[in-house]
Length: 240
Image (cartoon, rainbow, N blue to C red; front, side, top):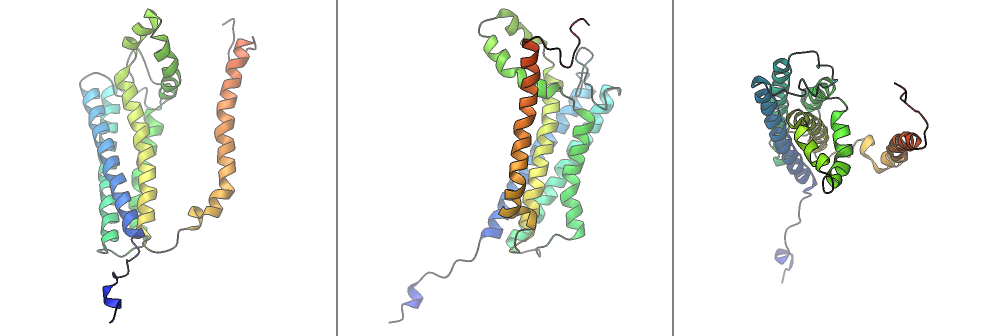
């Protein structure tokens, strides 16, 4: 009896298909985030609520001298363009994963992959300042302090929520766009080997440097605060 026919057929390598599916999911999520964020910024600016800053809480970004409605239009257009770019990336990744398109990162495909994160980076540099970082940094202390202080609880109503959410959305869109583009570029290679910068050996070389930088920067920030407590005037004039 020939038992070969009873065995299941050999399974094809589905790594490329899985990577394409993952890239498509990232592109769909990034497009939704970018589109909703751009539309929200547009509505906020055109209705007089401010896009990324208000009169009482101005943002010190590259666009802080422009009228709010102009900044809102810029962010709205950028958000919609990024959303379209991410959707096109996802469609291309799905086509390669299904075998409907040949794998490979040609020049037009590279331009498509780079366009969305590049535009998101420009929007990030133009519309954001250090306010989101300060907001997230002080959020835990303000949240805990609100349990014991009426003044802390009252401070929540004075926060510029809409501009802050707009800036955080721009930051999130930039991060998601970069991750999506990396996922899509990985899916477009098909069954080809990973590029050198994605090899474990490359990560082993650059990983310690990245970790050291990630640890050193917060330590420097903490050192300045500890110095203030000890009476060392670092970064400001106490008599001013």
